[in-house]
Image (cartoon, rainbow, N blue to C red; front, side, top):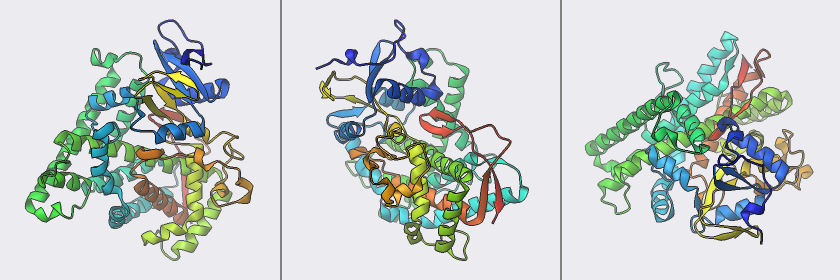
Length: 464
């Protein structure tokens, strides 16, 4: 029975370990390169702390299913979350997590998402008009920025029932504050020592300013929800959005109700996770659309057939008819997984793949890396949407190695809304425009900022 110290891994420096090899924006890619070199289970050090890295599909699935009893999120993530007020379902553990999830998850069920359709349709219409102006201008632009504004508007509407209209409001800075938050979170995750608690850099001061602005927005929206419920107490029985539902539990004196700080934490968590992950999925999908005209043509053919004479989906039931568009989004998530790194630790001494691991040892799981492994997927590095359409050429694909929303009890509660956002934006783009990569732009690169972001996605649009 080998100890963790006996596993293969990169050589490090005394005291520092491998910290100098881990640039925060490239942490995920470095871990993947080491996995290719040292195998599906290896170890490295940040300072004196030894970390176990796993990129085996069956083993990752087993560990995720054993939460929250046997494993929990890496305690450093909870510490960082609580430090900035993100006291929500994402960082909560044990019974606290069960209470948060019991109250938060119903806000994302099929009925609530369906009721949100009209607001989603309105924001998508605004995006379509925005893109029409882009096409008329005939100038290249970074479509990732549009996807981020789109998802901020949707998430804010779903959480608060409030239309921020960041697509058209040039003075709205919430989107930029959210991005700043995630970049800093990724940098602090890889830090050896929490220096920012003692000496703040320019970036840390900028982060503090962004956090203050985000919290101000969240608290204002919660205060407005309290006023609406005070004026119309019937909202306690039929809340119109996530914040109203959480406030209603308090007003009904429900023993499970979240505290004011926990409501703020959950809304903050939803804003951060919901905006960034979905925006980057949309951006990466458009990246591949622009570079694969044959795939784009097939998407357009399907969308034209489903939508007919309209310019975008008019009924939520049409979503199920977009099988090929959905396959393209799935394939984009496989090749560019926006949440590719999960961090856990065992609640007790355990055996992992016959390796003795002590309680509290950080475990870095690489579910995103599985998508590019030839042992999991045929033509692993190629864009093949057909693999998600029961194509006989891909019967050997291991779909259990595809975990864009996690796995097990802590499966992402917002997956329905995220999929709907992606399908609405991408189908609207395919129905109305041709999209090409900007030939004069610098090539897009990956940036790890807690999620896997494209550096930019410069494109040219023309009306169909």
